[in-house]
Amino acid sequence: MTLCVKIVINRISFQHFHKVLIKTNTQWFTKAERELQAARPFGYGPRKFYESSRLIKAAVDSKDKKDAAAVPEPVQEKPEDQEAQKKLKRIYIAMTSDRGLCGGVHSGVARRIRREMTARNAEGTTHKLVCVGDKARALLRRAYSTSMLVTVKDIGRIAPVFADASLMATAIAESGFTYDVGEIYYNKYFTAVKYEMSIVPFFSKIRIESAPNMTAFDDVDDDQLECYAEWTLAALLYYALKQGAASEQSARMAAMDNATKNASEMIRKLTLLFNRTRQAVITRELIEIISGAAALK
Amino acid sequence: MSAWRQAGLTYINYSNIAAKVLRRSLKQEFRAEALKRDESHVRVTPWANGRPARKLFFETTFNTYLKRF
Image 1 (tube, rainbow over the protein chains, first blue to last red):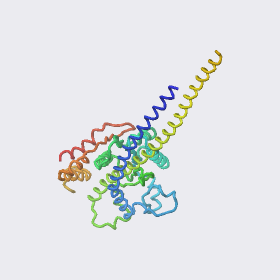
Image 2 (cartoon, chains in turn purple, green):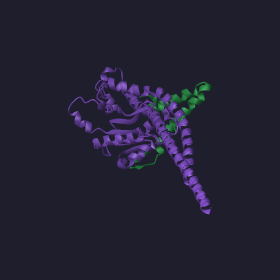
Image 3 (cartoon, each protein chain N blue to C red):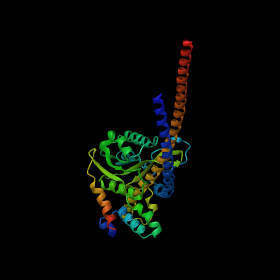
Image 4 (cartoon, chains in turn yellow, orange):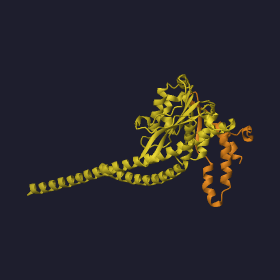
C-alpha cells in the first residue's frame, strides 16, 4: 500500500510540473509565432524569384494530395537534362533543434531526407548533408557520416536570430563544397495544431545565371548575382529556422497536453485503487476483530 | 568589384555589419532589445571524412569582421 501512495504522490507532482511547463511553453510559442510573421517575407521573396525566373516550376493548385510535399525540382528544358539532373551536386539541410519532447517534428524531417537520399543513390562526394540541431545529427549520423558537411549545435534554447543564419550560410560557403542545388527540409507552421514537412530549394550563382527566364531581368551584373546567391541562402535558413521553431513549439505544447491528460487519467485510476485497498484492509481487520470477539464469547 | 568584396568580405558580412551599425544608432529605448539580435549563439562544426573536424576557422572569419565595428 505504501508503494501505491508513493506512486500517486509522484504522479501528482509530475502533473504539477507539467502544468508549469505548459505555461512556459505557451509563452515561447506565442513569441515564436510572432517572430515568424516578421520572417515570412524572407521565404516568399526567393520563392517568387524562383518562379518568375523559371528556376522551378510554378506551384499549380492541384487537388492531388501527393503533389503537396513534392520536392521542387529545377526546370528541365531538354531531355538530355535528365541525365545531368542525376549528376547535380546537392546539399541537404535538415532543420531541427537540440530539444526533444515535441512529437514527430524531428523524426519527420530525418525520415524524408533518408528517403530522398536513398531514392537519388546519394554518395558522399556529390551529396552533402548539413544537420542543424543535435536531433538531426543523432538521427542521420550513422547512415550518412561520410556525407556530413557541417553540423550546428545550440539551436532551440533561445529564439533564432539572423546572425545564426548568417553564421550557418558562411560555414556552408567556406566548407569548400561547390554545389549546384540545395534543399532545406523544415517543418512549415500553419496553425497551432498543424505543421507540415516542407522543402525549399536554393541554387548556386551559376545555376541562377543560367535560369531559363533570366533575360526577363535587366541590368543584372555578375557581382549582384553573387551577392544574391550568398544572401538567399542566409535568408532561407533564417526563414526555415523561424518556421521550425514555431512548429516545434506547437508540437511540444500538444505533446505536453497529451502527457498531462495521460497523467491525470493515471492519477485517477491509482487513487481509486488506493482507496479500495485501504478500505479492504480496514474491513479485513474489522472482520478479524469481530470474529475474534465472537470466538471468545 | 565592390570595395568590400576586394577587401575579402562576403555580402553576408557586409549586410551584418550594416545591420550592426543601424542597431547601434537606435534610440535608447529600442537599443537594448535590438542589441540582443547582434550576437549568434549557435556553434558550427565542420565535418571531414565522416568525423567532426577542427572548428576554429568559421567563427573567426565571420565574427572577425563583425567585431571590428
